[in-house]
Image 1 (cartoon, helix red, strand yellow):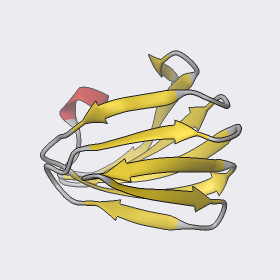
Image 2 (cartoon, one colour):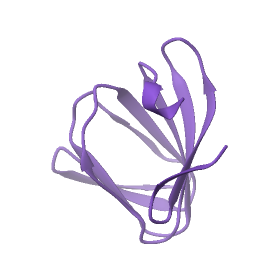
Image 3 (tube, one colour):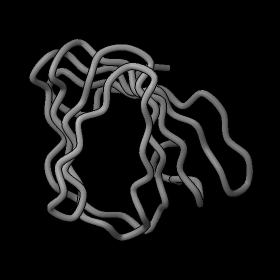
Length: 98
């Protein structure tokens, strides 16, 4: 089930176990995730489009086929540079996404 996250962003939990989950985010061009942090380690893999990440003050642009890891408790944000599909894994799983 697709759930709105913010203006122009939806998420869909694809799979989860007891300590890992996989989530698909869909971004409209220009949609933004404000700076935040959480106790979960997170990976991001861009299926389509591109995102500009800021992770602890370091800017990183990810395009289709590229990925990164956001450490637990690291402040991070993202802006979609175009229509984007982003597959994220979180460990431990995010109870708020179930």
